[in-house]
Amino acid sequence: MLLPFLIVGGIGLVLLVISLVLGDIFDHLEIGDGALSGTALAVGMVVFGASGALVASMGLELVWVYVLSVVLAAVAYVLCVLAIRNLTRSSDGVPASAVGLSGVAKSDVTTAGGEVSLDGPGEVERRLAYSDEPIAEGARIRVVEHAGSRVKVVAG
Image 1 (cartoon, rainbow, N blue to C red):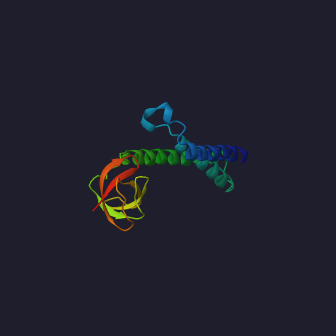
Image 2: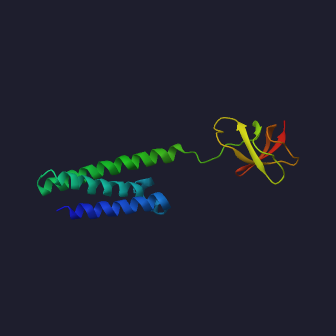
Image 3: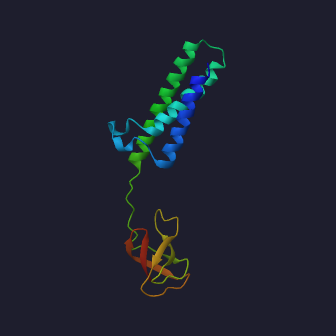
């Protein structure tokens, strides 16, 4: 009686791991603006398997075990799709320009590279930096150019 729930839950767990490691498997299909999500489907399958096993152990009739499992899986799927859609829309994906920000050199900065810490909103990590002139660790710096993940800095 538990075997179908364990199989579906196990497949869901494998799909969930694949979706988390490789990304959502249905992203490339572009179905319904994210209505079909591999991650959400995997979550629904895991909830179906887990809730089916739990409800079956309570001694209910088999038809009610399936009904409750399907309902809980559908609710989990819908909540997961809504959460994923909300998170996707809230992420802007466009890095803000660091040009004009000031900060401190956290290592010696040369033409080959170095690290700086910037004083700006959202600047919580160190950035890779380079400079035309050597800048000593601890010196104040200012960003004059932003290229990818690196910034070009000058003293001051």
